[in-house]
Length: 142
Ligand code: AMP
Image 1 (tube, rainbow, N blue to C red):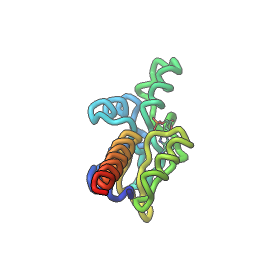
Image 2 (image 1 turned 135 degrees about the vertical axis):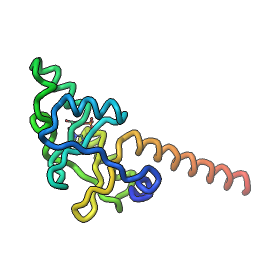
Image 3 (image 1 turned 30 degrees about the vertical axis):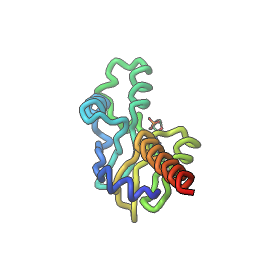
Image 4 (image 1 turned 180 degrees about the vertical axis):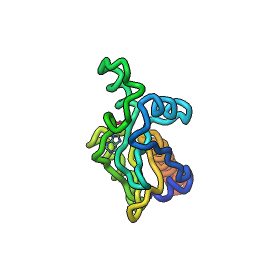
């Protein structure tokens, strides 16, 4: 299965913030949108990613003014991407190897979606179930 097929079903919405947005704003958005990560963009260019883990790390740091600090201080600037033509299995491996749960999807330098490990596991289960059903039907018919 290709990532483009998953994006067609789930949509291409990517919630973003600016590097100058505060940690408090990021926490608000993660909560209200019920998501685990936000892509950080500046003039339509991806400059980072911030996940709920970064927020936990920021709060655990003990800075009492943490919610008013800019997200640029806590985001990961070295973003790992996916492309729409890649397979579900290759992205699951990349996430496992890098220990990340979110991959923004880019095509020709343009952000065209984002997938989480939750999205991929859901599709993987459907794929495996469809294969199992196919095998059962084949065995029953032979
Ligand atoms: P996550 O597992 O996605 O909640 O993120 C764990 C850590 O990896 C956090 O520090 C994130 O900023 C970072 N991270 C998450 N996704 C990516 C990504 N696609 N590229 C680079 N770093 C990431």
